[in-house]
Amino acid sequence: FFLLFFFFFFQAEDGIRDVERSRGLGDVYKRQVLTQSTWEKRTWGEEQLALIRAQAPEQLLLLLTKLITTNSSLQYRKIATILIKKYVSTTSNITDKTVWNELSPETQEQIKTQLLQSLEKEIDPGMARALAYTITELDSTLQDFDQEWPEVCELMDHLLTTDDKTMAIKKEMGYILLTQILPHIAFHYEERVPELVECFKNTLNSESMAIRLACVEAICTSFYSLSNVQEEQFRELLVSIASCIGQCLKEKDEASLAKIIESLSTLSENEPKLLRIDFGNLFNCCISVAVSPNTFTNDKLREMSLELLLELFDRVPLQTLKGARSPESYLEDTFKAILYVTRHLTADIDDSWTCSLDDDENFGKQAVDRLLGCTKVEIGLGVLGSILMEYFGSGDWKCHYAALMAASQVGVYIRNPLGFSTLIPVVLNHLAVGFNAKVIYAALFCLEQFSKDCDEDYHEAYHSKIIPALMSALEIALPRIQQQACLALKAFTEKLPEAFTLQYVDALMEKVSKLVTQGAAMEVKESGILVIAAIASTACETFREKYYSQVMPFLLGLLKSYSEEKYKMIKRTIIAVSYTHLR
Image (cartoon, rainbow, N blue to C red; front, side, top):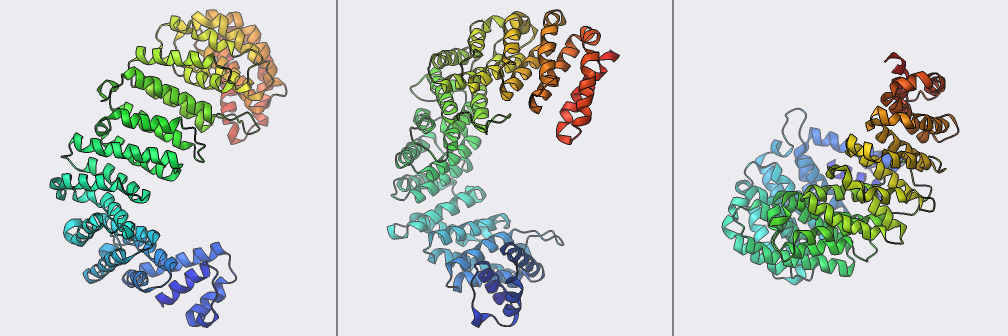
């Protein structure tokens, strides 16, 4: 029954029709599934498999194991392998045990033996990987892995030491097993570290990138699982890994490049001190990926490489990094790479330029903030300031955009308002007519962020320059610009003392009320209401006497018109403004 069910379920999934074999249960099944959609077939089949697994897990797993070893169809064998991997760690709702732990010892031994034999004989790379991952899945179900299944370690050693170049997939499988299993049996390999290192060194010179990738992942697992690794042992391996990165860049092998960076990131999270060994080599590799002239189909690779560096800078002080370069040199190249990536990923303006920041824009400013946060402020600001001025001098609008987004993060690190004396005029200059709309937006965002990050001294020092410039920006007839100008005004007005706010109330209310009451986009209306609320809070008495009766009827009308859940922020703000007369 199980064999018939499995065969016909996946045959129907593939749209295969075989009249001679459509008899009995299979015939009944086919009459059902031929009238169903592919999704319905799959859902029905999965439900039946779940039922069988619940009622007869032992027979089902034995059947799947038999299919792996006897069926001629590679596709069926892969599916059977994947299902075993899925089922062995599934927990029963009744007994709270995994399916594996409910099997008889005889069945467990039979499955383990056949999985290992299949892996040793398999020649198809995809099937071999599926078997390796299925075997390693069992390690989570065995309490004493090396005692209950010592044959895995024996097979792993055999695969790692094979010199048969025609069976390269075997070595790759050995490293997959090592990566998954070593954390559970690390104490058995503590005395074999030199042997492992030598094996790694030889493998990293392999002609097969797949084997080298599996080796890199195993290295990154080994060196935070093993306690007695010497720095010098890792240095040579790091050089070889850097060479792999260079080869991937040269051959434009993005998939392999991503896997290497992911493996190094894992090591950085768990054992960052190892990556500071010969850090200059690793640093150069990451920077070369970030600023590569290659046209990547996956531009996230650039971010991934910088994320790896930022992860290291977060965990390892710059002053302790080993290499010939100074901390300032590392900072300079990293800041330049961040701005390069921001500029590179900045798209031209089109209809998709929505009211929320894109991921690439978030990455650039967040990366700058992280880098400033893990170094001495005066050094970081000095290095970044020089680079920003270079970018501001460029004729490329994307350079100006990238520099402004980076500059938006410095406010929290500048304690004295005089520290803005050079930067504020530069930012305000980008609000002039003639600049690209994204540049104007970035300048407004920069001013908003400064207001959020700085105290009243900053607002008192620069209100006479900033508020008039922001009011002028409200006249630029682009919804996103008007929205951002309102957000910047709201942030600035909230922290400006009442004595200074009063001199702008009339002009501000005139401009903002016009946006809110006339045909502006909904996002602009919402941001304008936030400005009105900020004025009502800061200059409460003046607002109540001069503007409350003018604006409240219209705002209450909006409250009735926009009652949907997505407008809850507008509703809350209008209600807050309505309380002004009670103060």
